[in-house]
Picture (cartoon, rainbow, N blue to C red):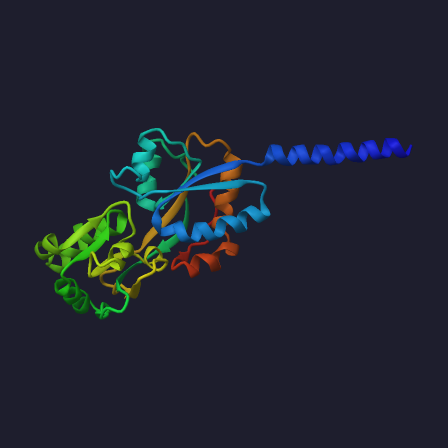
Length: 262
């Protein structure tokens, strides 16, 4: 009788172990820079509560750089979840790369600026101060992704300084803008705040003034060839939850806390 009970108990635990392993999944995620630092911190928290393992890759939301998300998808790299600027994600939904009805807005991201550590900090809290800082800088660096596109195609023309910026400003590919400023290759650098804060060797001088600010939603979506739909949804639900909000705020982002579409 005891042997029968032991055998039954062993079978139960073996079945539970096998079931757990069967339910576990590797989730391939690629994120653009704005959400990268938050994701690095959140993934270990997620893996503590889930059998799933998250494998993170990085790339810019747009552009033709070899490591950009469009380029990597274009050459056939496969991911389960994309996290990038909302407008760029919408493009992937329209072309069929991301499943309709899976977009979840995770955070709102704003833009800011840095100078090299110890350098004088210009006041960019007003439009006039921002304009003077841009015109006085010998060199300006900005992202090749969503924030940089906004600066070069909308803000600079709006401020009437496009001609000057064509001479002193440069678009940065496949590298954080703050890294360029930290090594002295630019006097002033602009990017999403969450991409500037983690980089050593720079001083954060503030967000752009409200009149110049561009708030961008960064969103998650599930690809049309995701290996595990349930696991992908589970990860996104965690990233969008109140539990993740403090980590997101610490990274310089604003949680959206959306209603999930599924």
